[in-house]
Length: 253
Image (cartoon, rainbow, N blue to C red; front, side, top):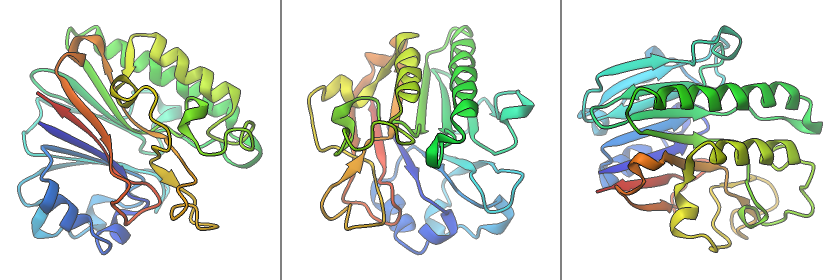
């Protein structure tokens, strides 16, 4: 079973930059998209999406944020947001329940230039952590995926020294992700490849960053212990273009 997560930086744009072809080639059982920047009614999906059930959570603000999940198996239930009004206006969380696990697609807020949104970001991180833990109490394992907007350790970005106080690599954001993992979650890519350097999922559009692989690993699949034994691989697909992010994948056996 293949799951794919991809921040498409605007689904309408990416539909013209290889997304349909990617779906036709990879044929994931579940496809989670972030930063869709559109409502469902604004998107004309091509034939490649014909075999999927589609679920969307869009921001109140037009053309901003948003997540979507395309799944071949119809879920038992779908939840939009975390049930916290202050955090649910931007369309950042979508939860699907399946017979064997909960799947959470997330697009974590960016702390922005000069970390001006960091205080809100830290409130968000804690709310999201508690939300995932509450899901786990249902008795089913939890899988979360998406753009977490944090490079956890120095190995996860090309230039850690220069970005020490930048959004996505502040001490506070890194500590928040450490706390999440310490609550019983596993970073699946690092589970399989603990020492692999140069493995990134986002590159700036500026300065030839992607061509020179000056990137960040900020897109993740995380799982609870109860399903870790079923995870066969976790991968990053830097060769797939169409966005400033590339897809990341999880294979379940």
